[in-house]
Image 1 (cartoon, protein in one colour):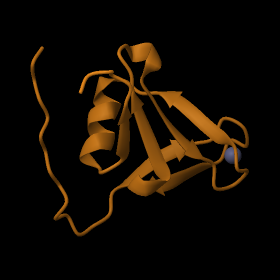
Image 2 (image 1 turned 60 degrees about the vertical axis):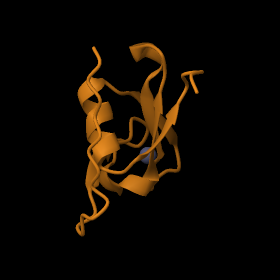
Image 3 (image 1 turned 30 degrees about the vertical axis):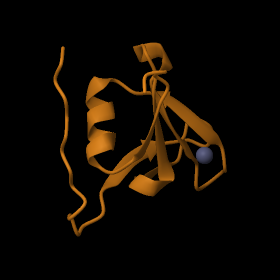
Length: 86
Ligand SMILES: [Zn+2]
């Protein structure tokens, strides 16, 4: 339970694109890391990622499982941690 992911991929030249879909307009698209935001809470219920649909402007929020969190962080998505730990 103390596994720490310290992958640093800042020297990567090809931008990572994430596939996402909008539940409102049902559009699917690829988003760059900076278009996504990841929120990591204390539990899986408070861990989610969000983005704004480029088609309809809907603010989409989806639960992020462990693998998705890892994927997003490694892809350079800005992460907000809700842990009140320093
Ligand atoms: Zn949409």
